[in-house]
Length: 385
Length: 137
Image (cartoon, rainbow over all chains, first blue to last red; front, side):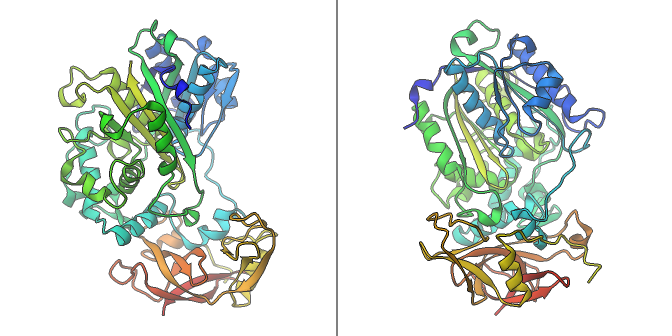
C-alpha cells in the first residue's frame, strides 16, 4: 500500500528553464544546468545556500554540486532516462517528509543539439546492447519506440493517423507558448507526409533535439506557505522500471506506467476524472498513446480512439502537454524536468492572463515521464494548495 | 570482410557459447532446468526462477515476426547507406524473442507483417562473427 501519510506533505515551490532554450550553441551543458537551478531558486525566492538536497540525472550530483557550490546532505543521481526527474520528485518528497533535508533542488542541463560540454556517446561491444541489438542497426531511441508501436498497430489496429493526432494537438498547444521551438500549426497530412525516419514514425512523430536546462525546488508544505509562489503539493507518486533494451521489454504494448500509475493515484486519493490537466512525456507519439493506456485513462488498445478528434488540443476534453511538449516546445534528450515545470505552472495559474494557454481552474494535475526505451516511468499527481 | 563497418558484438564468458554456435551455423540457447523456459539473451541465472541449471540446447531456427521497424536513416553510414532495411523482433518456436534483421524481403510495411513465418539464415559477417538473420519461409 502506498504511504498516504506522505501525500500533500511536500510542495514544489520553484520551477524554471535556463535563460534560453532551443538552439543555444554558446552555452555548455553545465551552464544550462546552472541557469536552470538558479532560475528555479529565484522563482522560489530561495538561494543556493538554502539547498541541502541535490538530485541530478545525466550529470552526476558530485559534478553539479561542485559547479554550483552546494554541499547537500541528501544526494540522488538516479538516472533511468528522461523520466528520472519525476522519480527525483518522489525521492525528494520522501526525504523532506522524513526530515532528512529541507530544500531539495532537482536540476537538468543538456546541450543535446549543439553538444557543448557533453560526454561522448559511447557503448561497449561487450554490453548486452552491443551484443544483442547494435549489430542490427536499429537507431536508438527512435527505432526502439517504432518497433514497439508496430506491435500495438498490429495487435489493436492503431493507425498512423491516430498517432499523428497527438503531434497535431501538441503543436496547437505550442502555438500558445512563446518559448516553443515550433509554433506553426500542422495537420495530420503534414505528419504523414513528413520525412520517414523509421517506419512507423515520420519526422513529426519524433521529439525535437534542443539545448535546454531546467530546475525544480521542493520544500515542506508548511514552509512553502511562507514562500512567494503558490505552492503545488505532491499528492501522489510512483516509479517503475521493467527493462533496459527494447528487445527485452516484457510486452511492447504494456509499459512500466502500469506499475507506477496505480500507487500515485492511490496515494493522492484521486481518480482519473479528477485530473484537470495532464503532462505526459512525449518522446514519440506512441509514448503518449501507450502511457495514457497504461495509466488507465482508457482501456488497453483504445489509446488511438482516445486521442482522436483532437481531444487533447486546446479547447478539447483532455488538455494534454500544454507547453507543446517534447514534440514541439523543447527536448534536449531528457525532457522530464520540463514535464514537471509545465505541470506546476498550470496548477499555479501562471498563464491566467493568457487565454487558452491556461487550463481554467486547474487544481489537480498529472505529470508523467517515460525514460530509456519505454524502460522506466515516474508518475506524479500534483495539486494546487 | 575486413571492410565490415557495422558494429560487431564482443562475446563475454556467459554469451560465448551462443556466438560459438552461430559460427558453427547452429542456434543454441539456454533452456532452464528449473522452469523449462528458453532464455534470451544468455544469462548465468534464470531471471524467472533463479535456477542456474541452464543447458545449451539447439533451436529449430523457425519463428514469427513479433514486431518490426524499418529504419530510413541511421547515424552510422554503414547502416544509413543500406536504408531502408528491416529490424525485427523474432519470436522463436521455442518461445524466446530476439532482435534481428529480416532479409530477402521488401523493406516496406506492405511486405512485412507481424505474425509472418520466418526461418534463420546465418550471416558470416567476418571470419569471427556470424549474425543470426531471418527470412520469410
